[in-house]
Amino acid sequence: TLGVDDSKKLTDTKIIELAEQLITFIPHSLLTLNNTKYNERQALGWSQVKMKAVLHNEAIKNVTNKIDTKALDYIVIDQFAERNVYKRYALSDLPFPNQTKFETKGESKSLAIAAASIISRYAFIKHMDSISKMMHFDIPKGASHKVDLIAAQIIEKYNISKLDSISKKHFKNRDKAWTLVNKKYQ
Image (cartoon, helix red, strand yellow):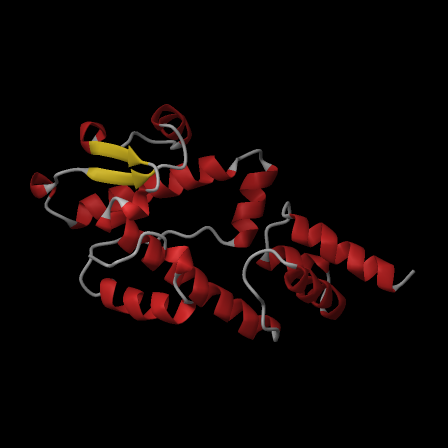
């Protein structure tokens, strides 16, 4: 076992160390939605649940294409929506529906989910590192006043469109950063 029941509790260094080992021997599919496409889908009315369902379903298809499905015991999904909601949003049929389980708190119950969470977090860390380099700012993860301040500095250095290209437009950090910039010039 990985000894992981919540990858969010691991340091970035530990995530990188584990993920770089896992990706060498675990069949996986990593699909990401860049912020521009995310913002486009969100503007069309897509919820985060719909986006996750579509990406999860495609990733499952990709992985099942890489493995011998005759040896497949089951597919487990870390439940972020009820099965019927997932099926409605996924845009395509659930592969192997009779062999698919949805688990709440999946990381603590499934080694596959724990490994997938680590690989996913690894991709997020690497993506944030590349954005930080591109923007010439050390961009913190999550939501905090520090994030708001950095976002305001990005708006000042570049513009709001640049911030929108690297972040989710509907998150409160954007509005807080915009308010900070506007207060500075009042």
